[in-house]
Amino acid sequence: MSLEPFGARLRRAMDERGPLCVGIDPHASLLADWGLNDDIGGLERFSRTVVEALAGRVAVLKPQSAFFERFGSRGVAVLEKSVEEARAAGALVVMDAKRGDIGSTMAAYASAFLEKGSPLFSDALTVSPYLGYGSLKPAVELARESGSGLFVLALTSNPEGAEVQHAVRPSRSPTALRNVGATMLAHLAEENAGQTPMGSFGAVVGATLGDLSSYDLAINGPLLAPGIGAQGATPADLPRVFGAAVRQVVPNVSRGVLRHGPDIGALRASSDRFAEEIRAALEAA
Image 1 (tube, rainbow, N blue to C red):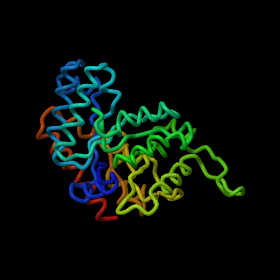
Image 2: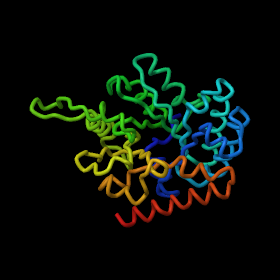
Image 3: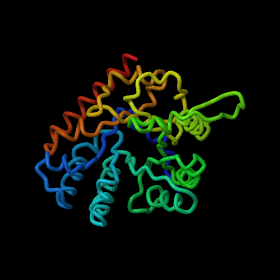
């Protein structure tokens, strides 16, 4: 039996807990800042602490798969445990793996993260559409079947992304042009059409990008917004950047919260501060 669709579960979590998403990003430098060794023991302590501190209070936790994979099979085992414990505590888990491939390989990536019963089963997965949006079809189909979701890279916060995402291509009208990022948003709007209270297919749109009023962000799905905190964006920027779509935004903070560890109370206090600043920004919008 599939879960209730991710979009519905996410909307409820955002309404009940606020929309904040906190990353679980065990950089070597963060492990050192916490007084931990850059080894499997440090990884396990870091991840367990973040989950214990935050899984019962934030809407979303977003582990970055690469920082676990670098430790090999033992690191992946820590990731599996973290996903299981975070979901058991009530947080939705977005696996930040940015997978993207074609055919059976894309289907295998989707199965690893979106198939019920997989040790890494997550509520949603970040994916890259830059082999063509259609290459994501196996992940889209499995997400629908399992009640999971996707976050598709559309307008990312890294400066290098512009050379691809801002490239202009013909749209369905022979006289009109649309850039690649806008094309991805349009595909997602089609995936989410008619879904209530919100579709399950979201976009990754950087909070550092400034005025996005030229883009149609009304995709009837969530907008995962990295860049708050260490990358320079603030919760107060959200209404200006996202406009009428701001209530669909899932603001992501990683280092801005994680740097306060390993003290659980300090992690919670930092998370609460960001959550309150986001709430105030939304109320003022």
